[in-house]
Image 1: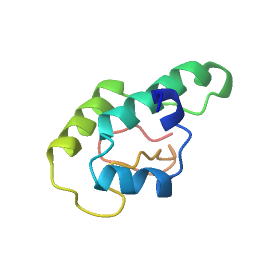
Image 2: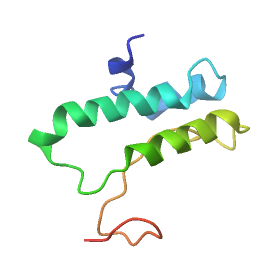
Image 3: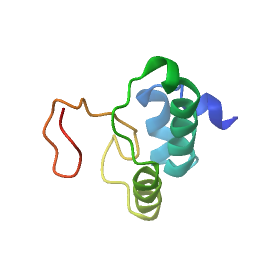
Length: 89
C-alpha cells in the first residue's frame, strides 16, 4: 500500500495492522506528515507540529511492546488543551 494511502485509513483499519506488526508506526507517521505537508498551507489545521518529535515517538513505539488497542494510532491535540510540552493558544 502506498504511504499516502495510510493517512486516509481509519483507526479501526490501522489498529490491527499495527498490533500484528504488519505495519510500522513510522510508516503511518510519515504518511500523516506527508499529508499535512501537502495540505496544511490551504487547510491551516496545525498551529504547532514537530515532525522530528513525531518520528522519534514513532520509532520508540515500533521498538516497544504493544500497550493497548490505540498503540501507534496518530492523533492531533486541539491547541486549547493544556499540554506539558506544547504551546496552548
